[in-house]
Each structure stands twice: as C-alpha cells, then as structure tokens.
Image (cartoon, rainbow, N blue to C red):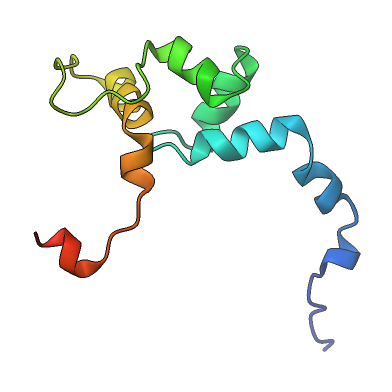
Length: 101
C-alpha cells in the first residue's frame, strides 16, 4: 500500500494565480463580513458587487454607523447591513482585560 503524497503548492500550480484574480479577492473580502459565507459571496459577486463599497450600496449600509444610531429592521439582510456598518469594530482584536470592562 503506497503512502499518500502531501499536496504542496508545486502540485497546485494554479493556486497562486487563482488567489490573485479580482474575483477571488472580492469573494475573500466579502466572506470576512459577518453573515456572508461562500454561497452568499458568490451570489453578490454575480449580481455585480466587487468591493465593500458595492456591498454598502447593495445593502443600504452607512459605513461607520454606530450601534446607538437608529435601529435597523430585523432580518437576514439587516444583519449583514449591521455587520457592514460595524465592520471595523467587529474586526478589532481586544485584550481579555478590555473585554471585561
């Protein structure tokens, strides 16, 4: 019985080329937003969204809005909208001592 051959970047020559495409870069950025997974990212891309600014327009998000601002209706789209508006806060890394304060 033969041993499995580990997959390396040399055995996948197209991986670097694919990860540098505009489509891949857009999908990668979209999936960093809470509530957007690979399927939703592909759907948004197919509908013409290419950047986070496009997503802001698509969902009617106001980038930089704080949680104290007017409330947003419930639902899937509004969850993504809130995640877009608070993306910097959601991406921030906090020390444990800051989290308990």
